[in-house]
Structures are given as C-alpha cells and as structure tokens.
Image (tube, rainbow, N blue to C red; front, side, top):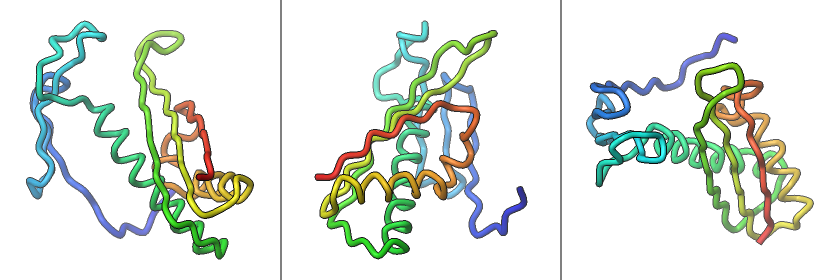
Length: 143
C-alpha cells in the first residue's frame, strides 16, 4: 500500500531494549530496560518498547474513534482508550505481540459504541498496521 505522507516521525535507539530511545525533536526521550519478567535487569525509572507502543496505539485509536464518531454523526462526551500490549513467545519461535484495547465511550448507547469502535478499528493506522500479524481484542464499553 502506498500512502500520501502527511507527517513522518523520526527516532533513534542506542543499546536496544537496555538502552535509550529518543525522538529527533527531543520531546520523547526514555531509558529502556528489559523487565525482570523477561529475564532482564528491570532497572527502575525505565520503560519498554511495549509501553511506548501501548501509549501510541491508545492515542491513535482514540483519535480514530473521534474521526468515526463525526462520520457517524454521533456526539460522544468522552472517549477513553486503555491499551495493554503483551509480548511473548510466538509459535514456531521468536516473539510476538498481543493487544487488548478497552475503549470507553461516554454519551452513546452500547450498540452505538460497539459500531463506532468496530469502524475505528478499520481506519486506525495502528490497527491496519498490525492486522493479520497481532491478535487485537476489543472490549468496548458505553459509559
């Protein structure tokens, strides 16, 4: 698929999962450490690539919900997206990811929320990028 580029983010990582990663503009800069659960040092005050991906996916999916709600002429009063990104051993070797998204849509019915979230999952760039490669579970809740 060829896209018409609207924006490009740039970042550099040194030291991999036990190093440092930073965006080119310097606004995002974090030290990384492999969690103890994965056999790493689990250094304090560090994060993981999965934390960064979870934060980005939640934000992007929330914007996709806002975009779709306008198309559907719905007026939710608040959209909150919680995300959980898990890393583990993949069948056949290597590693894989699994994602759970919990969108909470205020000011709409449960049926409207589910329709909105399903449509957002179709247009969200992160959802499109992982489709067919990462299991994504949606747990939609109208509040």
